Length: 296
Image (cartoon, rainbow, N blue to C red; front, top):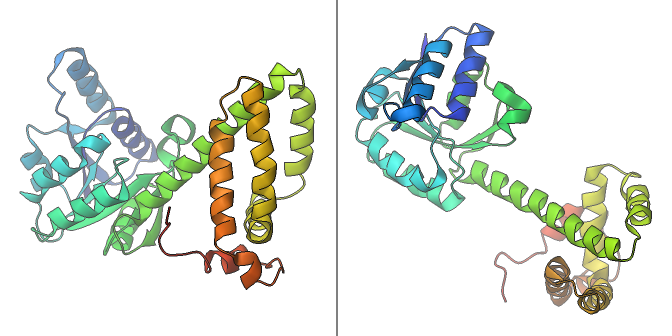
């Protein structure tokens, strides 16, 4: 029987424990939370543990000693200190999976810390909103033995995808996804804020919907990256005009300015000349031509 430990028993841990219980998985769940004995937070933690049949341990040491796999469900700022604490007690045959939203470099540091013991470190990244997915939230994992750990967690119902042997890979995907989705959010806000100043938001909505509804997301990514290699310079000139338009409308062009800078970067690579003006069929051909380091 798998013995699963949760370092931290907040909303995420509670959702996981509830999901495991509802699935009737053959698994024992333990948890330790720094707030489990503090005021109303402690009351909530203890009530949720009772509801989901989770055994709260008195210390991190007790949690590690009794668990096969420990899931670190802590704030990103606590990722390193959590790894340092776990490393004191983790032994061969045990695994620690850091599910915090810490950066790839922090996850690599945590992996390095865990090398001091004989246990296994897994970089984990929760790839969606718990409120939307619940227990079935997609989780990406990376690390030397991450695939093996993932298979064990799948037996109790976790939805995991192995991304590779290097710690930090899973978190990199999470951070880039966040950058993209939040960037889209900010771009939409800037665009429709400007449109509302001219009363054209409804027309713009229809125009953009017609543009993007015609193809899949993968097709959109391919079209933009491949055509950027050839047309980045011309597009930068167009965006330069947009920046002036927004400024004249008393709207700070945050996103437009960033767009201009990235397009000028693309132009500076000289890809149009390298490709002799021919748009590639596959965006991966363009990615292979990008420099390994982004210079200013």
